[in-house]
Image 1 (tube, protein in one colour):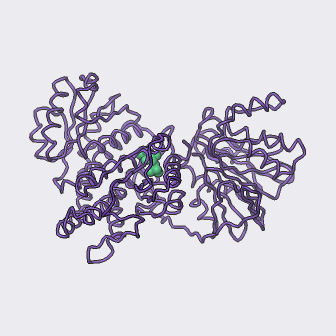
Image 2 (tube, helix red, strand yellow):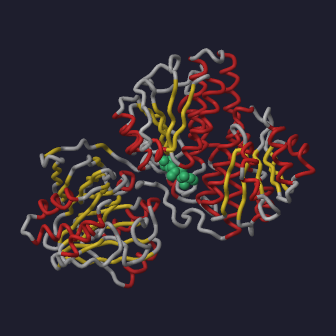
Image 3 (cartoon, protein in one colour):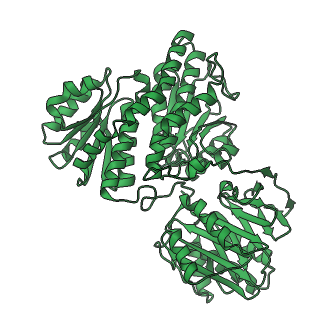
Length: 609
Ligand code: M6R
């Protein structure tokens, strides 16, 4: 996680650094800092908390200069405090670091035994200290930097400035992304190419092992073998519309993004169903869907729950065996990876460290890798054989909402295509399902008109400490996702269980102080969920049922509250049920007064493992 931004310009770069950090705050917002170098040496300002605190600090103690580096932090080693904020520096060099230095403890012990004094608890401070050690031995700047980087284990992206080199910035990466931006007045560096779009017109990605020396007029890149290289530049332009960046009258980005879902589904459908002939227009896939024996789907968090939903679709109506994995487990499990089984990776950001590592592992095992991503120039997108983009637009709230329904849209189309290729459904059924899909945006908009009913339920829940979510079949990943939303933004402890597992343990938790939310769409599993609902109700739990009106009527005697979902095509239920759970979490969070768009301890993009 964490964000790096750096700039070298003819005028002062301070405002660029701040703007860059604001664009990167989705990567962490525990503390922030900048360091400037000029002919009088290195100076820095740091502040604990969000970037506004750094801005305030700069108002009271201004810092201007033409060369600078900046960082927004998500704490891994050491508390979120000013002392641990980046850039870290010695008298000779200042460094902003993303990633984790896994051998920092050993390096620190070694350096301390040589008389080096550390001022923070971070792994990152090892880097400027180590560079200083090599500078003290008499090495040139780039040699000292390279020697230090060679000693580091783990992943990193860094920006560094030296006290006696006021005209240049160094950048290096291994495992964490970094991009260079080229503009008329100067050069820029950012850990996300999107953060360069407001200042640069061209950009290139650094590759692992690259070291770049950036001056006002020139950028020199050397690769891991210390050979001069050029990295292909691409034209970049501001793609984010103003509508992505402002709240458009909504109180929070999350609420705006919940309300954008009808439009997002429409746009995503438009991308894959461009013609009037109902053909699903996917890029050429590197495997034949008709002959596929098995598919792996891998993701983290909400993207993992999207994968779980797709498993029900792909197995249930496309007859394709699917194995769903959490990326952090998949990458280390040492399970047999079959080259003839393709893998599908799902990620909103396209930068999630575990998902990226899982993709690299699958590629090494010669698997075909496709991915569903929202950020099309992200690392996962660039490293996949084929991408299926979602058209959610920038998702700013840390809790994923519209990206999830956009992922579901692509996954449903993928399942439809697989079902037809495998002869599991005919063209008439495909056409019927597609037309049901196109009805979703208006169903969603209608549903959102009844938001006040969910607010009323949230009012009953605002003082609870725990909540249990139950679901069966396709409602299980919905329950998991609903519980994740609740814990992320309200900090209420929420657990989701397969309803059938209730009697195998979790029912011991149930009493009058444990509200239970049951996700039970109509269908063949409804009666079973109803039995579970009665079991928890008879143990005193307050029960909230999420079902259609008929289900609610049937359960009337056992429930304390209900969210009525319109009756729709059963395969498409996840799209609407998830909306109800997003809104419930959102309104509980508003009542609790939490920081909804940037909840504590979280970051939008999890770029370290
Ligand atoms: O960008 P990704 O989809 O790869 O992110 C995966 C998870 O970090 C993400 O879904 C996370 O769980 C969200 N905060 C959930 O709301």
